[in-house]
Image 1: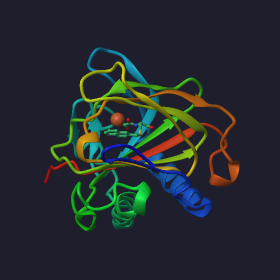
Image 2: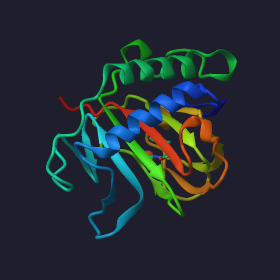
Image 3: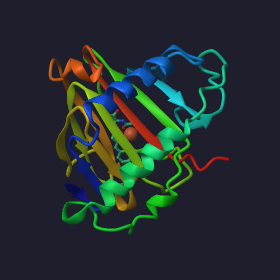
Image 4: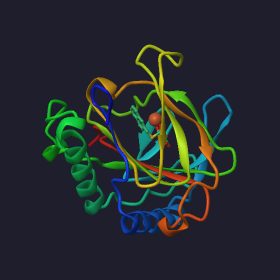
Length: 218
Ligand code: MD3
Ligand code: FE
């Protein structure tokens, strides 16, 4: 369903097998070369979610090749199969008939070439405050894949953290693509709904979110 121009939600996009394979890949990345960690914020706080990066290492407010805030190692290489998955995601969301955006008006999905993935793991009371993603030097869409427990995802506007916003429940296997005018909208995760995930998807608790992006860096 189209939530806003360029923002398309495709429930149940990933099969259970695909979810289990993605969880396995995320488990490998979480071990290293740069272990999963609570990102430190410039104001001294730490994020409640744990994050591991692939391709480029994200820290607020920049991307680096090496994790100078963790262990100095170079992050895992961004695999070709994950870029392929991203192209299929944008194509399905934007080309998918009357519910989708209905055409490649927000860029040619055949040229979508994500070079970084941010893997966020939510356990306990982890949440994410309203923010914009603007550390990328590219207006290409962001692809979001959810696995495990469902969450309330809050999709806002480009002016600020407050209303108007729309709350959408994201469940295991759901795809969300944010492009065009939605690319720089404020968004956040006010809560995760414990016990809602199917263990067959590979998560015994908590929520996993994988976002694919183009950094626009060489
Ligand atoms: C809308 N992650 O990693 S995914 C993030 O579920 C992030 O872990 C959330 O926000 C999560 O930055 C939300 C949905 C999402 C991701 C990126 C976006 C929505 C977006 C970028 C622009 C607009
Ligand atoms: Fe974000």
